[in-house]
Amino acid sequence: MKSLEMAQINYLDEIMKIDEEVIGNNSRREYIMKAIEEERCIVANDNNLIVGFLIYDTHFFDCSFISLIIVRHTERRKGYATSLIKCFINISPTKKIFSSTNKSNHGMQEVFKANGFIQSGFIENLDEGDPEIFYFKSK
Image (cartoon, rainbow, N blue to C red; front, top):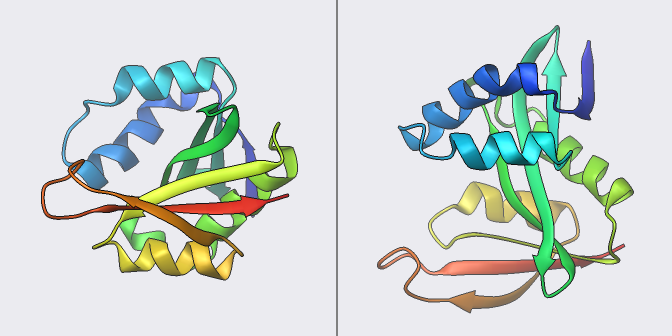
């Protein structure tokens, strides 16, 4: 059974396995733990297995910003990212919601477009040779 819920601290190790699978290290452990503790991390479960997560904050010009959406490689293209985004839109504490992805990440660009986000700008020099594309959606 698929479900979405706020992450609990006892999910940290399982969430970290997903994050490490994607980025190749555990450098975001403290960041993810803090998001869980502050109830800013939503997880997608399928048959009691965490398959993805979303982390957000409200420090982007006092607007909501989805800082991470990560789904297990084996579970992609099954609607989990969309489910996480829709869940967050419903609970977003602000009307304006932003997020971003690298220009090279065509899959995530498609997810944003499919969920009604529009491009809002670019930032160069975060990742050398791979500009960051910012997206926007209003509740």
